[in-house]
Length: 553
Image (cartoon, rainbow, N blue to C red; front, side, top):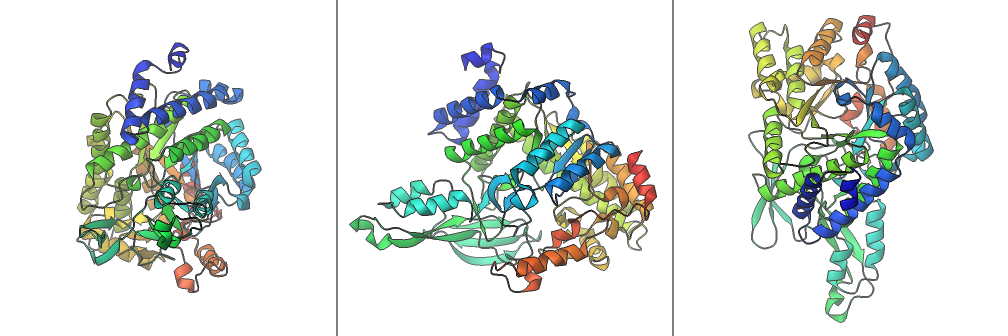
């Protein structure tokens, strides 16, 4: 630590703040976590390639404030070519969505390995993408899916194998420490609350009832209407002592926030955190400059109370700062992170104010602000564009919606918060953030234009160009507002030439999933609504050349 300070690695205040973060995450193992994390940070910083160090030095302090372009990869070879197109458009920042190994039952977010997906081109293909990006001067951001892994992940496989030689129940609990055990859970009631959230009430086996709120159903396929929030993993044990003989063939019930084929990770476990540091260190030294951390709202806090558990939320924020500090060290404070919080603008501002109170000096002078997708502004923009000239909404209604929902960030300045403004993106349309009086109307517009509404009317899937009926003038209006708002605009691929929903590819993916022998037999259950907003870009500039020219200008 002293040598780090002497070599201008970090100042002592930052290192003391980092120690506090480690103490919050793991009170028992904080010293080990702190030391091992710094050792890894020292290592990855010391082996950072010279061409990236030069790239670091040329980056403007506020490089992340330039507009972003986001891509859903079809193959790494095509992606490298697309980066050239992105640069020609004038973008220097690019967000690449979901590139890890995956079973693809949850659109790439059911990670089976933290390596570049083989079917896209594997590690060599990914390295080519990284080198191409650096040559073009593009700063790349990727997903960090750290909340859960697929059941086929090596961490699950290794735990199953180690369990065979376990001799006691305590041995097993140690072997499965990477995951969150939720034994004896029984669902006793399920209902939909006034917001449209599915609320499940459970008994934990000790006559203590609690509730889990499922904010939204991520997939409308394998886990449709499935709100058990758990996954049972059978375990074979051959060497149990006589006292534990009745446990020789049994299993553990683990917490699961998302798809049926996934299990949640324990982010207070040192082994998990250090492994993620290795993943981050490797990727930052390959050439990425940012991470969007997926499902941050589900880290640590598993929603076991109607109101968020304050202590769990504090640990959750500590984990977020832990990864940010580590990334900042390796990249000499150039890295940016985007925590995914699907909440209103005011809720995100409140979340950040709590971070400032609970952790007043987390690398304050040596790391960048955090960026957040402005989902409330997105919902407001979509509402205004879809309701304009509608018989039930006047011009004054649209103006009020704009000022109340879209431009709300002007009145919520936060020194550590940057907003990323968007119209289209790779995930659900979060109808739950639309004003309640207009939700039914927005859902109607989604359906009548070929989209899908699901999860009790809280989620929808449809490209913005479909939602506005292919109106190029409305698209230009939406893009202009997105650029003028407080924050940084992010253009989702294909918007620049009016790309519409990819219905054919969505159903093709459903057929492939049905034929993949993964236990799904109903084609409708295999249909993933979010695939409407993904797939190969279908360039049709000749249909909407004015949008393309508008974006380029």
